[in-house]
Length: 322
Image 1: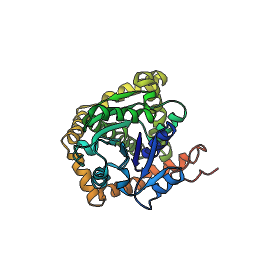
Image 2 (image 1 turned 180 degrees about the vertical axis):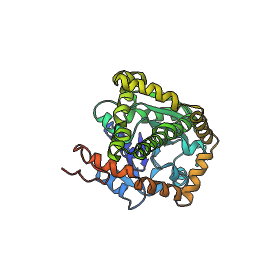
Image 3 (image 1 turned 135 degrees about the horizontal axis):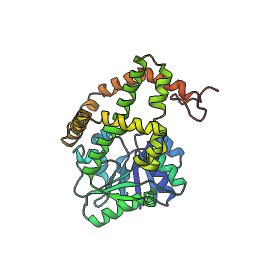
Image 4 (image 1 turned 90 degrees about the vertical axis):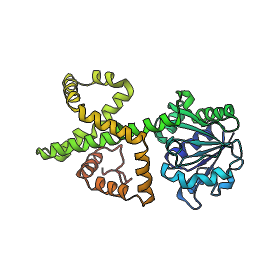
């Protein structure tokens, strides 16, 4: 199967490498002169910058940020042959109408449930990570379109773990909600509030960071390996009792109401519109968010902790001090 991957970031790079190692024919596309395209060439891939180069591809995977789909995808759609398949890593831009896929094309989703680095490392170990798969548009031959999606999922190693069929709608909405309520937004809010509470009460900032942020990974690893109940069996009785007491107090009507609002804003398209508006304006809100996070005292304390751990690299990419 001839596959073109547009984009060579965290996911695109891992998909391209896994497909190649599985025996697939893959080329990588992107902006002419971009660092990503240069990296793909250095990694031994055939590269292209002209959308017309996907004319012979049976599957074109768009491994680009969601905000870039509206402008970047249409030229590729126009160049794709009738019956070929457009592949997406996330249902966002299709479900929320950021792109309009011609009826002559199939549209599928393969979303590995983990970052590209995990997808690649597990593949090299002989394993895989589960993925979600969906057919959003069958095109001229719906059965063939689904077989292309299955082939893609297997090429990248997800068939070694599990391929879970879903829809673009379900994937997009649950993925956004999980990111906002727990994985990114929820953790950010809890860590920041807990750190500031301890510091305001007079505790050393380094200690506050270690207790409220640095140790998150240890508990997250236990949850990933054993589940919530298994995690509570692996911690001390004191920690378990504290978890019971705190969870009852934190999980109140206000929290549930806020989560429902987050989900409603995702479902009704308000979040997608806000994201598109910020991107179209040059991303001022995102830039302000980045500046505020970089300036927060948490970051300085985090660098101090990471400098004590020789197996980590600092946020600057330089080796930590001896």
